[in-house]
Length: 174
Length: 399
Figure 1: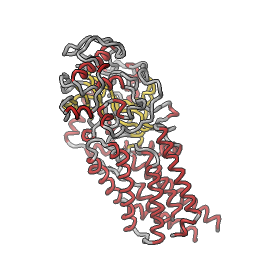
Figure 2 (figure 1 turned 90 degrees about the vertical axis):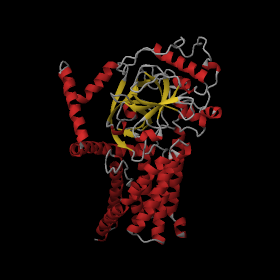
Figure 3 (figure 1 turned 120 degrees about the horizontal axis):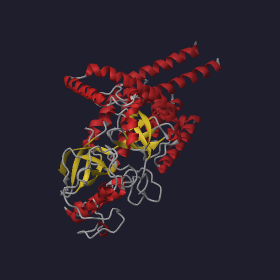
Figure 4 (figure 1 turned 45 degrees about the horizontal axis):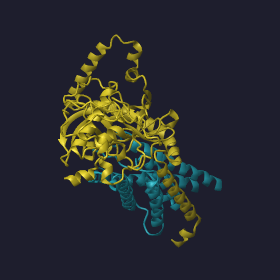
């Protein structure tokens, strides 16, 4: 039974890993789900959803992977979003374990907070810090729309990741 | 909650966080070199992105037919007519070129520029939140690509490689505010610096800055690279002048430039890994990390590579000669001298390999100067060597 559990958990984490790669591919593909020139970030809500379902260690590690992928497509320096998503994922797990319910409403709230932290930190280090003229338009026309568009996908990804978790958990029990 | 901070998980996560922060600092210190973690992530994701990009391209091509408006339809018809005419003119070319439409453009470029060494690349990813349309291509250091390699299309300059992984590279475009390219008007030989601007970037435009007030640039003029500095080859088409305006300072002027390449919708590019004159005018020290400019006003007014690195550090971009010349904008006399000197230097070199129209002689007579910018110039009202290049701060002070 123990070997079965380890094997199924390994497969589950591999599925999460690949799901993140697919989400990254989707969000960086030209024209995919673009709405008025704005494209969502799928990795932030996915990392939050995994953290809510899987606990602090797995949540933190997959948050780190999500952040690494965000950093890969970002023009800012490596590590910024990795650090933020690692810390935010662990904090999310602890919040869900001790104070919050693991619900879609909570996922939306936590995704909004995490996305705001990631996007505004990135804006600050890429543009704000250097004082380029007219950068406030980037916030209005890019950062805020991306934030809202990202949050929209939070319940969907929360549901998908919940179903994946349940699928593998049921296999272990069975 | 307290148990978590005493648990093994907390120690593991803290260790990872510490390692991550250390990697962050090392990567920031090394500049354009991708971190090992990024290399691995890029290696894993690149095949998926390539596949996805191909599928996306097919889907876009499929739906484009249904989404076309009447205007696009007419434009499409006109373009098809033009293509038919061009094909008639190309009837004497051999069958290989006809059968390989993609490589025909590559061969044309290669034939016109025998010293260019190209690496064709496919755009595999675009950052959703990048206002300046930076993108990722499927070629990396394993293919001989290096940081600062120019990125072009058969239409003209796109940007340069800002970061290189083993199997991928990130490209910063000429729409980026941190990008500065020494440029020259192919007709008038007025020099300037092509750079991005937040407002213009939204419409896929950039600007040719630091033009002297007495310039003769006109709408429709071609803007090409000056080639000074050795980062970009001389004569690459950058774009076409759309309009000319006076800077807020009132001292110099700038032109809005429509890039020749469709940067927003590119799917295939060429990475220029080697060309004649590459690195000729670079500093002895290797290029510094591609840092963001310091927030000081001098860095933004300096034009060229100095906008991407502090003045005290070696400039990563090579067009320093033209840009330094162009940066002497605060003083009209020195501006004249700098413009004349750089323009004559450009005139003295070979004709641009990609600029299709032959530049006409300059309309305004310019003082004769030695072709080399390092040689002592003939007497001018105010030789640039004796006048310190004023910064933007100086300009504002003057105001």
